[in-house]
Image 1: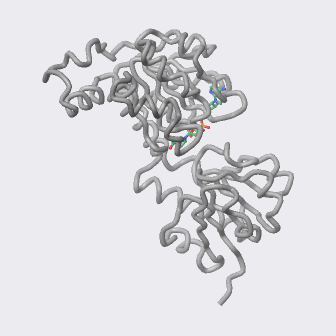
Image 2 (image 1 turned 90 degrees about the vertical axis):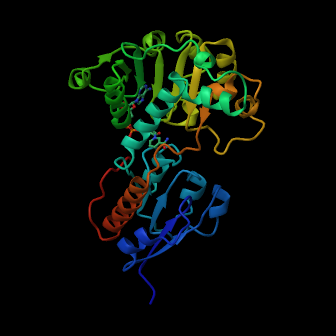
Image 3 (image 1 turned 30 degrees about the horizontal axis):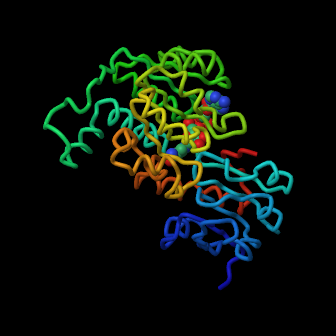
Length: 331
Ligand code: NAI
């Protein structure tokens, strides 16, 4: 029996679609395309009534103008930088996100990267496994005590706040820079606000990036910003690749400006094998080999979180298709 609606999952989810079908199956055909580029969507998405988008493809004007009956695009995640949401609004298509599925996991990953770097865990494990040198902590010298050191949060939203609370639990002195946060969150969380990015970069032993990718934040942390950080500091980015200009990282590690970096997100995912960052990271002779941790945009992931995104995305679609108000509209 044909169903009245078509729900399309363009990318990322390619399994049996059980969570989505449990919620939408009685009213919509649910189809996953497994696309890796916008071209892969041509001819397959135009009749969608609702779309559940992840982060392997972008929906630009090119695709959006072909959608003939779409009511809702729900981004299974927080960042909406891969949808031209303004153009979607012009076309009468609502865009929503799912802000409440993985804040804790992303904050945990940021802290995991900080601890693995700042406690020398990653470096010593890499060295010892390769049989390089003595069975001794000397490999990681000098490591400094984290208690009392400054942990700088860029973007005090859901994830930035969760990271701040975790850093506080480590005894760190937490500061944040977020020009859009109303006053008072410093009091609520027991942390300090700084008024400029420069202040944050200059004071922090650890800089953790938690703002969205926007025109304003694109390459906000590049060579000049890193040069203004403290000597032997740490940079962690679990937000979006485009915020940090990763080309600056290998030299910053080689010069000792950065004692380490943790990167969950890259501007192009997966990166090309000949990107200078990847070359340095793979090269056992480059200091970045053991001082740089790279993950494949995995900070959000836990079994529970992934199920949350899928059921919340499908629930938003059901609400849109049955004429109910949709939550977390971003356009
Ligand atoms: P949120 O919207 O709660 O917080 C973002 C904060 O950044 C807001 O307080 C905002 O005022 C602030 N901000 C905006 N522009 C800024 C600027 N120019 N400078 C400093 N702060 C600025 O978002 P949430 O849920 O905390 O997520 C943060 C980011 O993490 C998302 O935008 C997304 O890109 C990324 N993310 C990454 C995941 C991963 O798997 N690696 C998973 C989920 C989110």
